[in-house]
Length: 300
Image 1: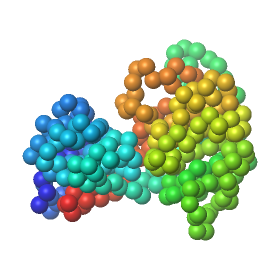
Image 2 (image 1 turned 180 degrees about the vertical axis):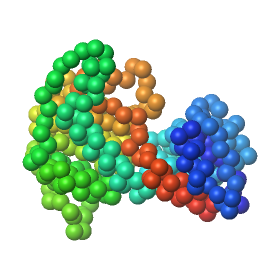
Image 3 (image 1 turned 30 degrees about the vertical axis):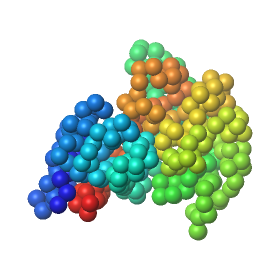
């Protein structure tokens, strides 16, 4: 039986984890995070399996985790937190969990659409600070939503979009059988979309996907939503586009460094809406994810 450590639980996670991890499951030691890089090797010592929510395992750290055989990452974007090439080099298996929260993440993305279209976060901050500026927003009915990546989350996004009167179109890296919305080329999607929502996995083919050329090809003032991974957007190009008005608003749940560094340039801009990588975070989705994580850990 694998000896398993959940390396970086949180109070919110623990509330749901205790409902899922039962007496008949494998024993799992729970460490309340965060787990700092310099402490990870000592924490992992004696365990062959680690369940990881948001701790960074770079090559140097992995090289010091001598007995580690398996990392179960809570989500799909393990590459953002684990050096996958280094893990393979050291013979460490990395498992991910997909499809557990398609509806939950899509609902968060749609919430960001509303927030960006009506400047909700910006006005909230002004009113809380004693200011008052009724800002003109965008009516969504009839606007085109371009969905980049039509996997499970993208399909849920399409369903929600139709329900509120948006006109969704989509682009996917590979063909989709029986797509629920019209499929178009990426250039056409950029040219037509009033709102673009990113639902791509992060890999060598998608790193920096939204670059200067693609920002330039988009509608001026486009709203960009990102609940995928920060790395699919070229941040210097994004900052230029936000400052010039080529991108009217950027609403993101994901960042290159999490928690966000105090010197993160996005923090200085008004035309952004920022949430703390919480798109997946509902009890409904969490229960499914933790159940699968426990089963993956037990399988070895």
